[in-house]
Image (tube, rainbow, N blue to C red; front, side):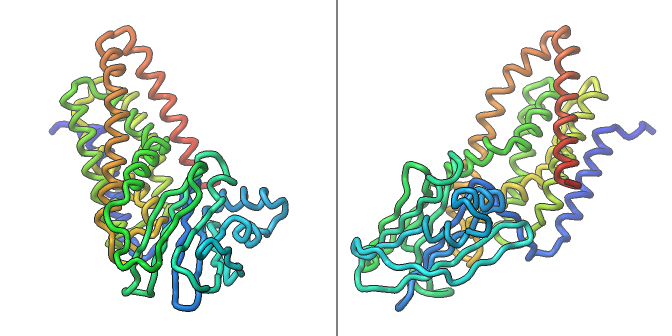
Length: 355
């Protein structure tokens, strides 16, 4: 009997880890996504509430902006403005809470004055680090009867949303900001990109590269959808270390195996785990929280992730093929790059699991 290959052992280990994740409680919350905040504006008959949610790192930056610790409420009051027919509404802090990951949420209350043209202005993206984005949702009604009137992704150049509360036809149609969010999320997800690069570094043929990318795409699309739909979820404290471990294992496999064919099983197994990491961004934006309006944001976000991933793979493959076609380069660069992958992955593993 032939001895079990390292790829098969690693693949089975990855499958076991993913199976363990699938047994976790479905109501476990994922962490806030740094650099991405949420402002949910609910318009009632007598009151308007604006709920601002941010990651812990963004909260610390906000405290620095107001030049005093514990001034997150003041930051929210200074950053969020509501106008009805160009008349600014007075705001008051109704509540503030933190989650287990250190993220914080502040709810502001505004009087429901006379008027039909509501303007929501947020200075959060402009105030915090460059590149910060904020999803603003404006809805009217409560619970299952609530209707979304507008949804916008704000940044440092666009800081307001206008809504006609008297309109009988709320704004409909896909929010293409989710497509841009998916692209920016994968391009800013250095751990996902390093994992993909390490996978491609170990294959020699285009056919195997296509199988690898396809397996990764199918796997993380599956868990991304299941997590956003609320079927299965996993805490970031488990998902993030496993993502780092997947990078280490792929780097080690590149070092110890001279010939690597299709590694779709390994890629698929760890791709399931990476999907939970992608889901954090959509769940942080509240997609799927009320059980409705999931399909379009989920589809556009996933399409953005795939476009970004395909762009990166397309750019990397000619370089990797050039290296593999020259044995002198292959014997020097592949081990060196794989060693770097292992070091970076190990650093992330220690940082996420211990520090």
